[in-house]
Length: 424
Figure (cartoon, rainbow, N blue to C red):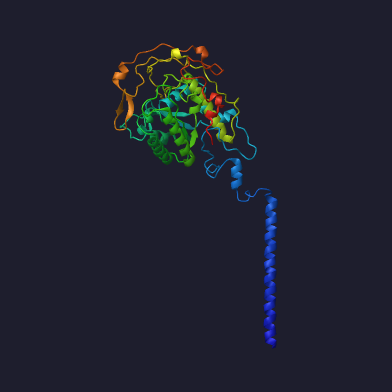
């Protein structure tokens, strides 16, 4: 072997040694980094990435869609199905819960109009005094038609479509409540489709707002007709619950709290023994919304004692009329700001218009929205029966009897019944 060959061989040997030393140095450096990372974030694999693992999300009862990157907003089936936090939570105060709905617009039909009258009449700034955008007889069909085609709610002293009103108001939260009037003209599938169209338009106008849907409430026993049945209402609520889970829309399942044991509107919660609701019902609305707000804030259920729900006595069968009750659904305007006296909530009001039956309605324009005819108005006769006011706030649940037309206590009594907690 020549001298030149020996030099080349020695050079190759040194290169191999240097390569091995370099590889070893890299391995040592990686080990040091790994040890430093484990000491900084002990026992939390996800801390270094700023996210939670799939296993941790499963324990917490959340998914990627339910996490806080959705504006801190959890879509849900009802307030009982909150996201359970892994770590200890700080319970919100009653004041924080009350202010949750302060920058909110409630949008809907006569049921929401009645809710607005109850809030304003209480004189207590309930739920932070939210905005009410509602109209008697209103439906999603109406909401999707332009001004001039149908009547729309009054906002800031002028008639506006709900989209115009929301564009002016720009609330942080929007609560929609439709269904009863829609069932008079559309199938459940069509109503869900109209909800979808409405929500998509609202998101274009108020892109940062959280959107919630209140479940459609039931019809009084024996008053169902046409497509407006409690079976269809339950199907609509089921479909909207599913829609909410798929589209980041909160679903507030209020209907079970106002139902009797037969799944109909409870007699102690209605003004007309049909679909419209009294002050007792709206007290329950307020408490359920407070419970829902508590859950939204911290992911835990509120203690029952914090927001108790008192079930009123059932109306005796002898005070329930056999036919349609004379009733004019309430209109809400911004002028309704003074407290009012809430007397016996089971009074059957004497009004100019009768609640239409399935055969006493006519379509309005092209959308088929129900409107009362002059013949129906002329046939209205006032009634004077009313429930003694002393029973209005009875704390105990009503006792069942053969004379109670709507059964005994509501299935949801104070939110404790399984009927009020849909299965996950």
